[in-house]
Image 1 (cartoon, rainbow, N blue to C red):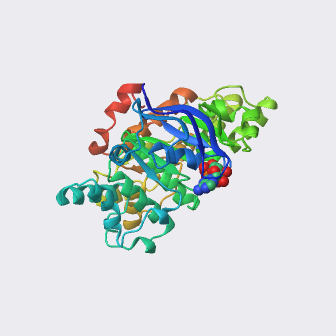
Image 2: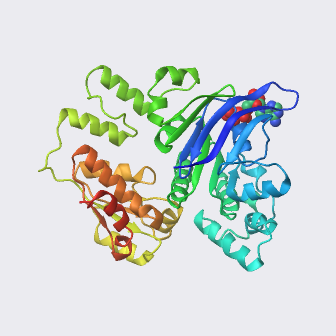
Image 3: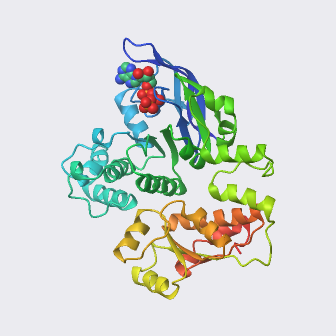
Length: 403
Ligand SMILES: Nc1ncnc2c1ncn2[C@@H]1O[C@H](COP(=O)(O)OP(=O)(O)OP(=O)(O)O)[C@@H](O)[C@H]1O
């Protein structure tokens, strides 16, 4: 895979200050999920502002698609079409009298036709779960809604790379989980995503590349496992190990689990323990997981299915699925980490149904299938209807049948 974005020996000092970035070098591949991780003042925000040319390095180069960034206004316009930035504080990004006008601002500046603007604004608002919010003044929105409106403004430009500074910092746990699901959806549709965070749990679980920073330098660029299983590296960046790894390390030292791939989630940790204490048994009755594509299934069909299957736990991924559940008074058992939770329930013989947007259906099938391959357990994952089944062929082709 080629490098989409490269930082080559970047130095930067704010006026009359000492250097905030000192010789930062790393690259990002197309389609990556990257987390810049580091303590306060590490230089994460400053580096992100380099990604779409808001700041120009005092020394070194930023390369986009192999081409060094140029800082004249015409070149910067092109860069900002490709690299969208969502700031930590949404209030600095939202300024128009209505949500519609805010989201339309970028496309309007690009000189898009009014008909086209309307299309992209409606699509962006639908994507972030804010359809119907067009006329609302942004300052009256909740923190989570403001964040989504700011993301819609960026999506309206259809960027290839999305950069989020501390995306979950002002959100409650449910809001943060919703937002990360939205990022997963955008990633599933092909976006390259970069976030900054000091939340090690989130970075460890979500990213496939970690850029560990401290004091304006990169300590390490590598996989989450490489970074977070190295206690010296974690300590040198004033961070701590993710809780699940800390528990795993303790269990390892007591020989209560075998040394295998480091667990990323409670599910994987439980699987390691289970492998040691009770080998998976072919005769054990496991629950099934039904998956429903909410983008192509009528709300009444879903409600009827749920009524016909009262024993199933219910989970929803993404705002559209959660909104639908709320509108139709479908009580949810899982609203975050839903795939892992449904697998955990299946392991004790309980069935679940997951309501998900179309883009996440193949992902659910792949995740369950991967779990089954790794654990030796066999959990059936089934499409709720034909409109969901049609989305699963890619997932099944890649990894063989799901059941
Ligand atoms: N506008 C500015 N003027 C002067 N110095 C700044 C400015 N913005 C940031 N700095 C300094 O640059 C360094 C890096 O700050 P930066 O905000 O990039 O770090 P960060 O890793 O994003 O921190 P946080 O996690 O707290 O947001 C810090 O020493 C900070 O004081």
